[in-house]
Image (cartoon, rainbow over all chains, first blue to last red; front, side, top):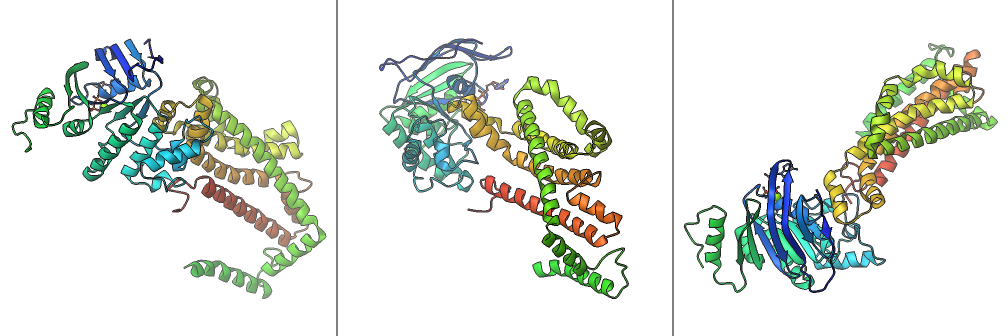
Length: 241
Length: 251
Ligand SMILES: Nc1ncnc2c1ncn2[C@@H]1O[C@H](COP(=O)(O)OP(=O)(O)OP(=O)(O)O)[C@@H](O)[C@H]1O
Ligand SMILES: [Mg+2]
């Protein structure tokens, strides 16, 4: 139970650098000697079978849980979007987006962020009037308005229907291209990882067991088979090109 | 449907009036509604009714303010601090088990039968519902939202102001509504014993002279003020909880 996020501020520094991270619940070691580096503007997807410690890693990076060893170096506090939108039901959308924003023009900045996610005309609406996908977009706006250098997304799309999910993929891709934070996306969906990420990591036995760069598409079906094999799923049939 | 729901009470009132007019109901037992209205008018004109009403309301407001503040402060303390909870929650829960009106004789021994005793009794009745619902509300705030507040970098005070208090508000307002009812009950009881003014005094004074019209009038006034207080609480809920699906209508 020692170290936490260590601030550093050189411009060449990565969005986050993790060295020899260790995290245990009681005697059960979940993350063991894990190292990871994410550059600014880099989109990293994290795969791994259920219970392997993805959420644990993300929460450690967010500074939400203590760590038991190693070091996490991040320039600033990362922004997080959880699987549930976690909007405050008693605040209007713009006040939700501006939560924690220390700026005199908070409303304008919140309005701009909401406009970016296509909800610029709903500033004073209540969260309960939103669909699931819209609520997730507000949560995304709330994270991005902080201008984070690291954006942590835990199964952001898991609760959305297929069509909304595809639209959200587009939106996230655009927003990340504009704001260029480092992104760590936890997902169970191999195709989603391939579609969005520059780099895909597979976590196993408490560390990063496999790494795949997706730059220069084309070998996608091979990547898919390879990734599924890493996840312990045999894919006999490659998807048609 | 609305018409129908009002029909029964109106018919009842008319029958009552007719029975009284026909002399089947002795005015000593129940005066005619029209007589009660005339009495009300006379007492308003003479100024004594408004004076007594003012005195009663003042007692209620003072007792509510004092008891409400104490209950809220204790509730906040216990809601936020495990230490405070361990230190005082059990004592409060034990005192709460006593029906507060049972303390009346003791309160009279301590404080006599003056204003202080009346305000004290009201405050006593108000403190517990406010306390309980405040602690309950704070405990029920979604821990995921508190975690979100930390992620967004809120300090402790901001966390309380933006997340914990709004989250506890529905429960706190339920407490307020409940406390209004107990405050009123406490006032009626306190004013029945040794009051020199107030609605309760009016009733007890009328009893000496068998003025059932005045007694019925005071009962009606107690009822009306109870309804008014509840309406205010209801309005408060609707305004402060406009965001809440169970309170604010569609927007
Ligand atoms: N608070 C906790 N106390 C004890 N053990 C925990 C706690 N949280 C998680 N664990 C354990 O740590 C391991 C990793 O959990 P984690 O939530 O990080 O998995 P995950 O990879 O996110 O899984 P999923 O894909 O199902 O979300 C699991 O075995 C889990 O049982
Ligand atoms: Mg998880």
